[in-house]
Image 1 (spheres, rainbow, N blue to C red):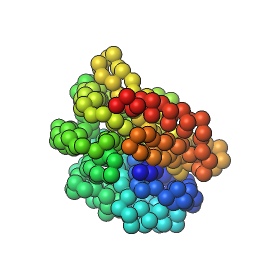
Image 2: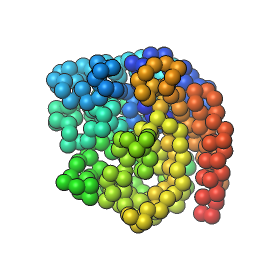
Image 3: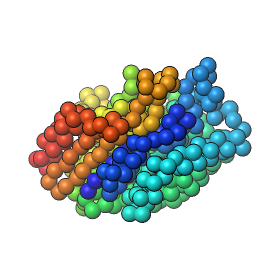
Length: 317
């Protein structure tokens, strides 16, 4: 079973995206998009007309106009369009969102007015058309070897009076997750926009800002064997081994991260800071193979190490 996954695609910086052609040549069984599938905002106001958090100041009409335009641009990109059509023909196209395609940079659910939340949810379902749990953005799909659970780590996120009162998934979504973890397939793959414990240069969000939810998640996932967490957001290809937190008294699952499919991280131009990252996970009953790519070039050392650590970790199960 072959899975390709990636995140963070900014059409405004890259209106031609040949990387999707490389994924098409790989011919995966499934394509998972892990958030920031479009960018409603990017960068600082001195360098960008759609600077970070600018959508919060737009009227409801202009907010919808900008989001629809971003989706139309991305889904009209020739290579992406061809890949999506191919994946949909085999029922292999699935996605979730993160902040930039949910609303704006670092937006949480209680930051977004109800009218805008309705628009962003409606357009996600219209354009991505992948949820099996409508009208929710969180859902699950079963594959021959794995149950795949896609989380919504934005709609229900709320900032409390202190970190211990921050909420990420909400009770209803946790109940859904607990229910869907009850299955007999060999692997469980959980997909989300946010990583559990990795941020670029210590900036942005990850699950550690929601310590109670992170502890609850890890407790639930620890009850299953062969759990893999896929994430995006950080503009890097990365794998993170299970790690015990003495503070939370829990262990995070094995994480595979691919982020930065078409993004210029600092916004300072092509060829300087552009990212073209994607990854693959091939699962068999007794082993896995992980490959990280930058554009069409394999990152061999990282891929080999991730594969070895992954297989060693699951060998005893």
